[in-house]
Image (cartoon, rainbow, N blue to C red):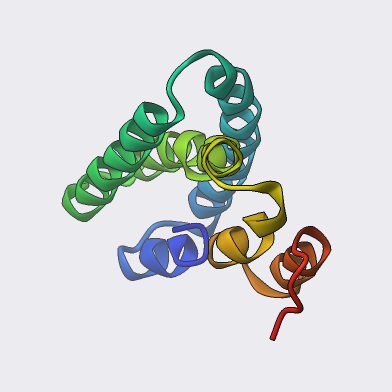
Amino acid sequence: MDTHLVSIAHDHGVSTALTGTAVSLLAAANIAGTVASGPLSDRYSCARILAVLYGVRALIMILLALALYRAWLVVISVAFGLVDFATLAPTPLIATRNFPVASLGPRLRPAVDGAPGRLRGRLLSTRSAP
């Protein structure tokens, strides 16, 4: 959503100032959600955390489609920011609990984007990457 938030706001006639505020708050909430998800992943079931996070993300997308007021853009941005990158801690934790360390690179590669994911895969895997 972060990538498309500006164009969504523009299409709905939201001012650049309000759009900038929404994007900034989304970024700050991303950091807060990522930091909070680490300790939560250590204490609670990662599978349940991920289920809640993805469920909340789906609800936020529905709310975004139904939002009639421009101020809701800010509320939705903060809510989405809190759950967006929060999946970064529980996902590899589930992988490390269920797969051998040598296979984590190829298994987690689809979960990460671009060159950093390929590099991590090569560093963690004993197999040669394509």
